[in-house]
Image (cartoon, rainbow, N blue to C red):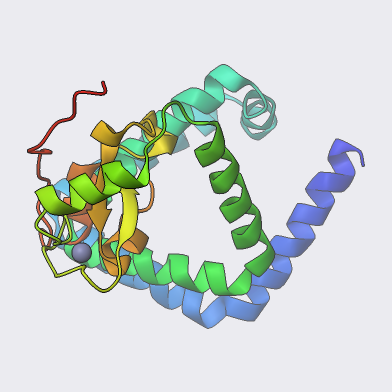
Length: 219
Ligand SMILES: [Zn+2]
């Protein structure tokens, strides 16, 4: 498939997606804009960003074309990922915006079961290749240290528990016991690839961004 064909396919997909979810997308955008307006800091940033983007476009006639080319370069991609992470962090500091994002993400997941499966697969592969390992004895020791409570919300996990990475594998964490905490199913699913502080903000402070209070001699 050529780049043009791929671009045409994406355009067609986006067009159909927009047609199907038009009302909801507009409502979301309006809700998001209302929230941005209600917060002077967010609104200021939003205005500045739009003004900058517009000014840039006006001075460069081939702006869109060059953007597209830049998007294929890995160094540009890395910067963009960093910017996106900053944006996500700011957004998660606003509980209403965070809730809106969560709702949009869960709708996206429902609409894209194949993509969700692919991601899950990738995640498992990463887990298998991560540095370090832990044994069932390590897990038993961690459970005891945590008094059989979820590391994050402290609900009792005697009946069922999940093995969670304190620093996610996707964020450079290891499989060593020092990076393992026991979590309840709900916290494990909600935390995903977030760092402890991000998780805490994402839940509106419902769970604390605790430090691990026990350590192991293995590392
Ligand atoms: Zn929990």
